[in-house]
Image (tube, rainbow, N blue to C red; front, side):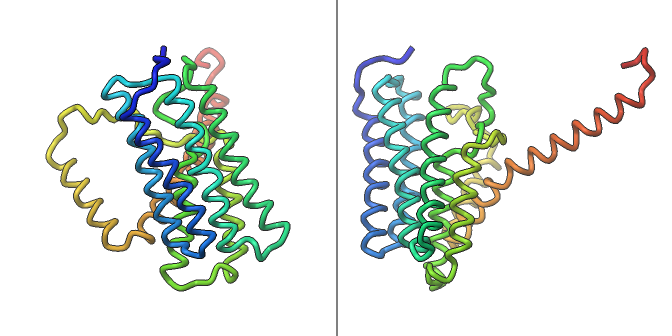
Length: 250
């Protein structure tokens, strides 16, 4: 059961994530879309740290959980929706703001469902149900960042932007499984090659952050669909094998 007190350290990270989300909205309104995209990625990093810091320092609290959820709604729901709307979707009229709203509503529903499943004993902690909102936000931010990097005007890719916004919003409320990484224990010793892989990952991202980050989160977004397809094929094969077995072996 979470403590009802308020701890400073993890909530500092949450406040930082909230500020980054708000900053992204302000920068998008000023037409600085690269700054807005980077701010969303910073919010994602800070959001990943606050929970881990709370668990490692034993400073989890009911207040922190609620505060984190509200911060996530701003940083990964409202901010990405407004950023992509101002960047590309406003030229589509009603279709544009509807696509942005579908994303925003998907983030809200995703967070509400996640909060209700936190203490469920039957939930597999290895996987998320639906695409996590920070990853969906990173997909939106990565797309905007890549377009700005290559000098592509948002109006020229407005239909692609609408498709990505709809994809992110609907995937968040889907039942597809997404790897959570929660079983990774940062306090355990790891082989040397793991540290080497981490260093190589940082080098890869630093070579071209927009393309690499957008590619990573686009693949992660598609991984849920790939997993669902793979499990469907396996079930079909298992059912076919079962029908071919003699009755006494079924």
